[in-house]
Image (cartoon, rainbow, N blue to C red; front, side, top):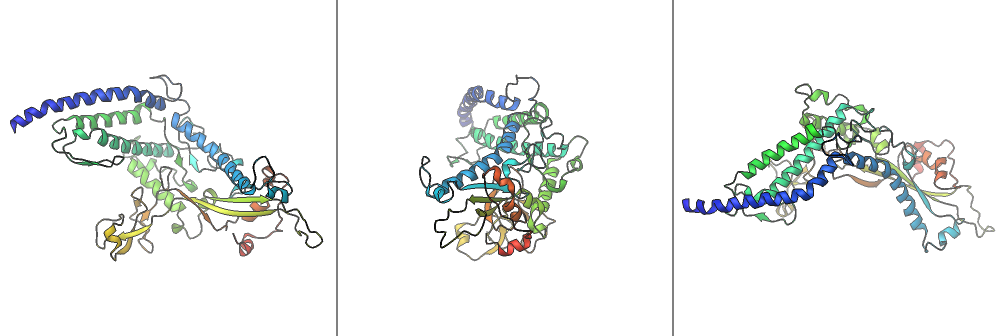
Length: 435
């Protein structure tokens, strides 16, 4: 044993030496880029923070401003391509039959405004229901310390998670000989044991150092810089939530803040918690697309005349949402609350008890009723959730009749002739609606 240790120690010293040299070379390439992102564009090292909040908020503001215009452009282009069956240089058969006009479309919000005409500078009226919590950002006057601390907590969670993955991957040779499975390609399992430099303390030194440095970056150097946008809690329900999560003045408990945020979002948005359709879902997550086709040119007026003095329309409604988890098979009596079904479980009779869409993110709410649909599993409504979906739904919004009659369509479809329903109520409209 003694001779084996004497033979292994020089090798482990070399591993540490060459690892540090490799890390130094890698840092010379990567650190300038990462530091410029942290400081912000054109900000000198050691200077004041970016007055616009950093690179990440700048990018997210651009996304908030341009997404509605991009969605409107895409809707219009899809309609044009479907109506144009010829080359761009020739008039399509559709255009010839429809007064030489193209098939066009508009994407509407349920408040009766085309998505590209919304007030994107107003955090309470913009198309995407998000807040920019940066202290120096354009939403600073409307945002509160609650959203700033929520954004800082979300930033810390993502940064810490990424650092842990990086540490496990980078420092695996210095781990204590325990096999480790990589979570990214190649998906191999390192052997651990003798091949690992487990006599070195570098793993623990590295972990403590990087954790301390991350804390300094998040809490001191960039306290309010590069904080992510956050989803706006409906009905102003998040006001004061962070203030109630202070074990000491000025210190915020992220576990408390995140839990309060998730529960408030779920209670205000999930239809299972509200008998009627929640207003925020209707306002912020439902969109109506309308395609406009000019009335066909009449070719046999002696036999048939087009009786209506309006143009043709087709419409559909779409929903953007975070889905509830799917039900999967679970072993009866197991202490594992939710899991993926294995091949063995798929061939046996087991209860449809736990619901798992994937293994992140999902929360267990003890106070929610367990019946009839196991409501204690709740989805996470925030911008970091990777499970956001969009799907077509029945066009039952109360705003559909008003949208079809809205004269704002002429700003996108010149000379369009919209119908007049003569005071038809949404309830009566749904009775004849087949969309």
